[in-house]
Length: 300
Image: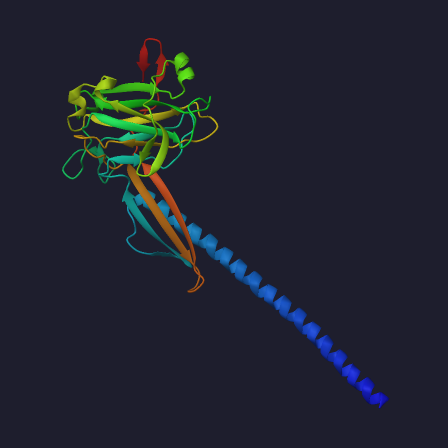
């Protein structure tokens, strides 16, 4: 009886040992499978992102979308290229600006080669009124880093003749105490919303108020573009937008192209998708933003 009992205990010990070993083996295998899956997913994610970037680069070169999926090794991309704010009255610039940064609001259209035009199918803005909104929602007016703006409107006194370009310029500051020393004009009362985007400050300008003659803004190809420069906000980037939604004024032309590229990599059921979005504004004529200021005027 004693030997049989000892034999039974040995079997139990062997089974327990096998269970422990099997548990350890299964745990190691599970970790290995998980690590392999994670590594594969990370590799697919990198390939998908690289494919999306390749799609953006191709669109920047060709200026057009692929119209379908393009295969690159084990990954693929598809690109959608659209005109930004074309035939709309409003334009929310997609990138926050720090002090010294500028955004460009175009009044003329661009053809497929990027050349300015106001031909059939390429409408141009010929209105007199434009509202500019800026400042992240909730920004107080009294801070030393509250953004002010400088607006420079480029126009032709002889529409269609680039050699006759002149500039109408104005500056506006919501900080009343600061404006007393920098001699900037004040802003309009209230906050501003453009297509659901909230801004802290606003100013409605007229082309005639900037000294631009009527023949340059109510004639096709007279107005070229407006540059809005942010000032004082050295610590935080602030948003800016424009609206031409006034009675009698026209909608804005395309402000650039918006590229959305989606990269895909992996196998069915475990695909990695990565999306890259890029805004490219139209190129201005050379040296448009480079000026030397001195007491007697402006030299280019």
